[in-house]
Image (tube, rainbow, N blue to C red):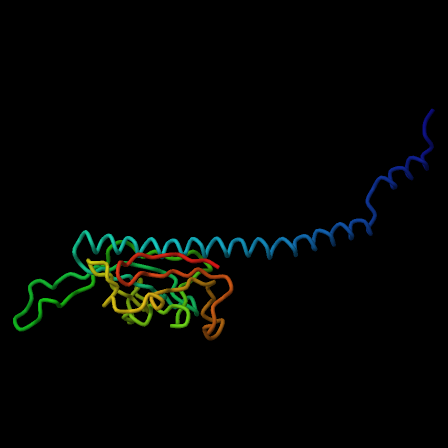
Length: 216
């Protein structure tokens, strides 16, 4: 026996979602996304900071090894290509070689910096903090400008000597450190005066050039 047409239509309607049910589902999805996105962003930021801190520490270790094996000072440069407001976003090593030939009446200690290895950019969203409060190592750094692809960029660099000494080696241990913090675009305003709660601190032994990574 065939089902009446009206009963069939009622059953089909009762099996479908109502507009209110759809709106409730969409509201739940929006709330879940609002909870998940900040957590995901925080995890990505933490991961980028960790990778950046490891890159900087690794470059300092490489500089120490190169200085020792080559018996020449190696400079670790923190480079700021004017894209990040609150710090340096790249690292590169430079070797100091005696000029040849040395002109008369000129000290044989005159040097020319020569890049060794490529410039290494930190992961997006991470930068080496600019300012003595966050990166005390900048007090012993030489600051100037350099050219990157024809564009000027600021940099600050410190030297590791063949013996492992950082600069003169007379600076207290607690002043030879740098902090990796979340990067902020250059249009965001002045640099912060306090460290971000999310950060990586790298301390460099002034006598051996060895870096240690600390994370809150």
